[in-house]
Length: 109
Image 1 (cartoon, rainbow, N blue to C red):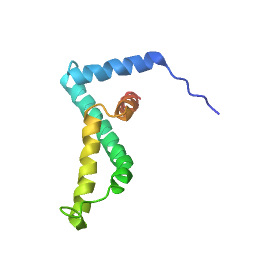
Image 2 (image 1 turned 90 degrees about the horizontal axis):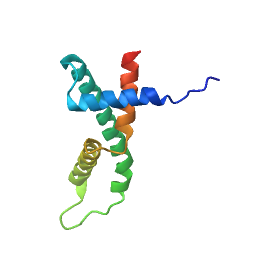
Image 3 (image 1 turned 120 degrees about the vertical axis):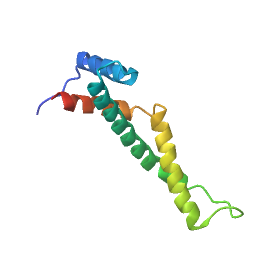
Image 4 (image 1 turned 180 degrees about the vertical axis):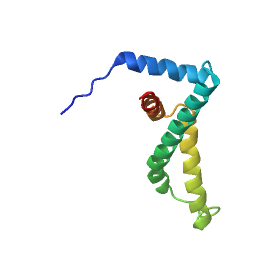
């Protein structure tokens, strides 16, 4: 069984690349690739968060005066998706950063 070790030097390099990509410091081609990788990572985190939040919102009772019915079911699922996207855009819970680093590692190999 092969043990994987955490290499802090590699992590620091990837963190520096991530910061440079956010700042747009690198050449246009590399910056575009980093931007696409970051967007993909944030989309992944948004989907993950939406899936985790969906059960929480499904337990909330609907208001009989203004709510309920199939329209609210559609709205609620769209609202949960948007909440997940906004949380991911505002920093999320760290999943996007980890996924972004892994995407960069895979591109270097």
